[in-house]
Amino acid sequence: MKALFVAYNQAYNQEIAQLLEGLGQTGYTVWQEIGGRGSEGGEPHLGNHAWPTQNHAIFSVMDDARAAEALEKLRATDAANPLLGLRAYLLPVDAVL
Image 1 (spheres, rainbow, N blue to C red):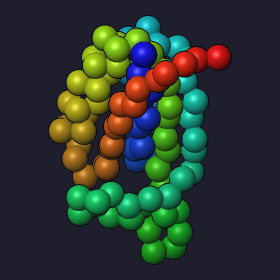
Image 2: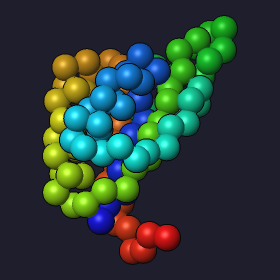
Image 3: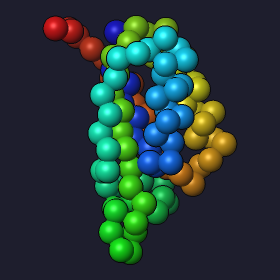
């Protein structure tokens, strides 16, 4: 099992949820209106006067095959719009309650 954590520009909110649902992944948690700045030259997304854009994040636990497919689709989404600042991380899951 893997945990997928994705931080992304708020403009992607519906697209990311639809991407997961299209893979049959209906369970996830979303954080809205979070701030941050990417380490690869991205603009800050802080939700203030100077940097008004904000990020959202999504977390979902899934089997390894689905996680690999999700990551590949997220890579394609990021490549199509690199300035929007999508970042995804796969983490091992040792147990689920």
